Image (cartoon, rainbow over all chains, first blue to last red; front, side, top):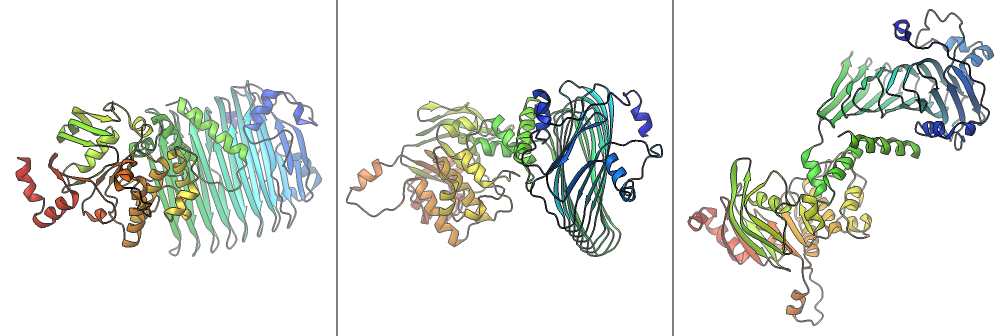
Length: 380
Length: 251
């Protein structure tokens, strides 16, 4: 499958030299990075990774106990990396030791980071196929926030991004994984992600794609394998005309007292969204809740919500709520009665709709969400 | 302040209100009695300008201006405020946010909320999971922020327990500048002259009259104003003989 989709895209692209100081990037590209939560100055960040096309151009950690490496470098440095790599998502047969790109982030036992690690996966060349394999390992009782910004350059319209992310959250560890996509209008995106969470571990994923993309297909999965593990997915999608998104999230509750919460908010201004969700309760005492809500801000477009609950034993507690529709007239009137114009009322409601109260969301991301909402209104 | 002239209103193709004439002068509070389905909420909604109520004849004057064709928010900005009987929930919008939206001058949500025992609700989604009494208090705190010159209240007492009723009565009196303050020797006439706020209150049970002094009462029956007069007298009569007698006045 991956083979056929790569056809028609430039496979290798030119190699880029290492960039010691990311602030030397052109202003327009820096702005683009900022919109995906990546700060070139690296202020308030525990580490920074940047991959431009298929070259790792920047990679550093400024906090002890946090290792940020190019995945290829990690493979060469530690023999045991081979045990993790491909452990959750089997490696492509054609890999066979070929050079890889992507990030390796490892947090040593008990190390709790104050600032996030930021990673940028950037396509700077028109028509290029970018491939990434990321590996994240949180040792026992470690804690980390990762912000991954995936974007195309300011002048790139077309490209292909294939990304694999494997994450291991060991006993009592806590990983918050925020990913922001900001693509050119003709970009095809195929990310895959699997996370394994051990006893008492917490994995929170926040995914945003608030602007147009040709096609985005993803269905990341988390397996809660240890007692008391928690998995959360927040998914925020905005699809303008010409965009196709098929985005889901899945949690397998494979140990006692595990808990999953999946929340999705989708908006179409003319694009096509399929929003899936799946919680499987495999052992007694597992709990899960799934919420998908969609707003149609246009007469065109489609939102197709497919929430799935699967109970494999009797003693599980799974629930879901789903609602799809346009902005309610009575809500608009309510705000108008308090003095807002119809347009202001609608944007307040849409803003509220997208407000899922994500803990510890960097303010730059909140600004990015505001910007996307402003753009949504133009599409109405 | 408010004048309705020969006002007729339809919902869809059905005429709901016919030839309504009503005037509220500055400082006055009027109450509207009437059985279920008589058109009370339609009248309030029409004054506020909700588009599902279509004015088919007559006009609405507010502060001497014809506002019949103005949208809801333009009326709000001109000094009209309404407490909804069944307000909607707006997900992701906090009570704090909507108080700030409604506020005309530099009012802090904390101060207003404290007066209505709503401090713990400020950071909750507006109306989400609120009880009957909490909904009413939420409506009133928004109105206090808005501080309108004409207050439209749709059954402020419904679903409210005794304890909350006193609190709600107090808030309404404050809105209408009818708070009982210690008499400072000023003649009543002067106190009344200083009062400019107006109210139009729908009541089904008449219970609100124990808390808020109203100046004029009206009975709305089958879409027509059948009589007007002293509100307590009217209500006493309705309690005795029921709305059935109103039919004679309408005919």
